[in-house]
Length: 290
Image 1 (cartoon, rainbow, N blue to C red):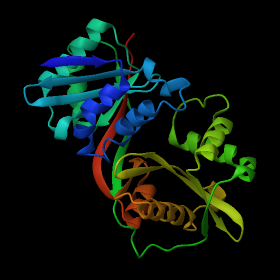
Image 2 (image 1 turned 45 degrees about the vertical axis):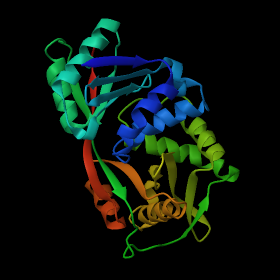
Image 3 (image 1 turned 30 degrees about the vertical axis):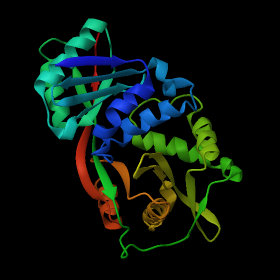
Image 4 (image 1 turned 90 degrees about the horizontal axis):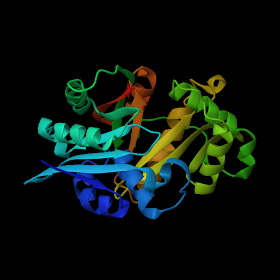
């Protein structure tokens, strides 16, 4: 097995994009982050690729394992064609040990995560825990049966009056972590400047939001799906996601992808009614390296 660590994100993308693109929806985060890095935009913080850990493990057949970490976020892995090689995982673990690479946790397909933790346990005594179980979904056609209400529009500057609170609500419900300072305001500014955030209105009142996020060659993701608690159970969230999904398809993408928390059966059911189908299960693990 050959371990290779990269310092040039464009070279990393050139070497891995074909492998990752065979499973675009599954690798939306990996591919999307590499695209961010290659564009060189929005460089402050975690998007500064000079701070990333980027690596591959190969054999005579080609790349077997791709690894990316964008500190302070978790290590993300992909086994080519989901064919897990324990030799490749051992090679990665040994190389990271030798280089002193620390990581706060892991986010990857559940079977690969289990193999990684099993092998990691042979040389690490630190505890680890599951922080979130997720399912990745993809959609190629919005269901004609899904009820539509309201009108979708692009978010605008006037929405900054309420959007920070919505983003904070999204964060509290989606992450069991302390909220970063200025999260709502900063996320609002970033989303408004990107032009990717959409608002569903009913009778002129904003009732739900969803954002196009991490577009790659043929797949575009959806994130920041949120409806204020007082406005739920009226079909607003499903209408918003259905409309944004159709917008993505109308822009020429062949599919949309999103992550759901498996602990929330309601959202999983709603997304399937819209037309989303499971791609694979993913897991987030936290690891105490100290």
